Image (spheres, one colour):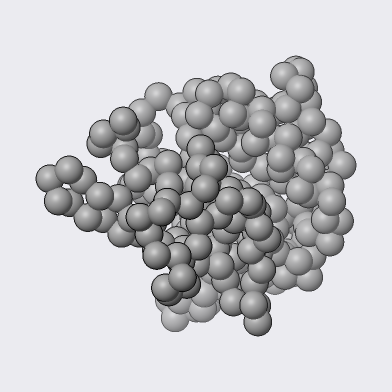
Length: 275
């Protein structure tokens, strides 16, 4: 007897049944019990597995009961999970540069199996974008102890890294390791000296999130300065340069705030911000 875990097997069974669309056969039963009047009501014993359709597009639902010797009665209603909605190419910003895909599992074998499933899923769906997959992996997937990050500039590079990870092969595009406890992120904003001409311009062109927050910062600064933030960053004619202390400090601050918004948009929420 599974004691404290009693009922969990039934829950797992029904989760799998809703996913596969198949009602499994009741095991170790050769014939229905004679102590039950099977002619009354709609209850039937599943002597053979049968398909579980989705009438009118409604999700499959099932009830699982667990009865304890002491009289405890727990009932769980399981509903078919919706299909994961990965961003279509038109919904995700086109990002130039490297895209990370984060994969995790409980143990190395589970990690490799997850990489294999993800590779097969993406390979069969050419309509999904590399950026959309990366966002979904961060936002919608649980992070287990054994983790890997696959990086690449496009789908083919990322899929190649996933296949190498699934096969247990070394690949320069794959970084893996084991997380040890919770480590919250802390963002450190640099001070004067980290700036360069044109900083943030290319990222603003590639990331709508970064560009929107940068524009908000520029609007907020406009009440206190006689120059335009974006003109300064682009090095427009007539705009002051980043050599001026009264320009570089608020400009650097605006870029850092916008970077923080970009990180948060992909699921990185800092425990603290310093600098």
